[in-house]
Length: 322
Image 1 (tube, helix red, strand yellow):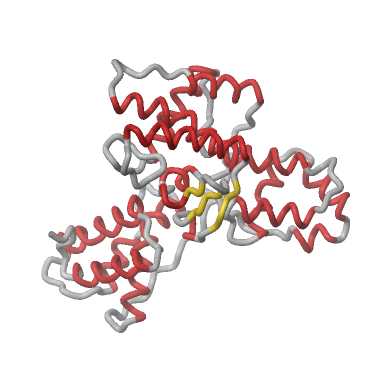
Image 2 (tube, rainbow, N blue to C red):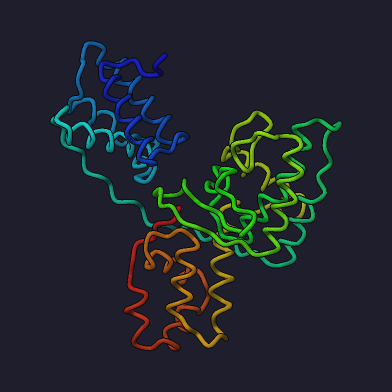
């Protein structure tokens, strides 16, 4: 049974099939918002069997409770749907202008080694509740999941959606197929992380022999964003003073530690920047520049060491990170 019920439901179904086939679909975000748009059209325009300008303008209008960025997130899939329909002659609709995102004021949390040591110690000492299967799975998963974030700089979404078939434990390579912007890339693991993931795979396979996702819930699905943040915050707060820190900050920490390690090297700067950019799944090398603004005095150090080449290698760009 189709989840869509508006007059444009058949076209939405074709759009969703097309995006999924092209590998450009994010079910938690796109799936929810296209369904909400469909239900909006069904309720407000029950007699209309085609996509029109009023539908799109009404849905894309910024709400009082939204920022420019959250409005863009809510309407992004509808904009893609309009482009799909327009490009195939199914609609003659003009897309509303996108609002300029507000300047970002968020500063990632600066971890220190002792805090991280205490955090991972808490992760390692989970006690399964009455030996329940779901609790045992959690005990096995949490320490490896967060160590993977820490050691590779992988996005939390990439880790959550990582399929078992995409993990090469022989060569220690992750094939990241579902990412921000859906750009496929590969991540080479450190040998110690590969060993930990091998041990995890053997242990978890005894409980979940046919799992699809490398990190799979007891219900047979990938973990949610809430699962990541709830577990991170629980064990962080047990180990350290509660603060404004989120799991995604581990990715920022990975980038900063790598950049700081270059300062005393022979400084093959361009090569190192390329490697870091590709490893972190940035679409372009310029996107990696964001981290220079949050590493104290690093920008001046890089400029001093690279002289005239600095501006050519690191131009001013807009950050692409969440």
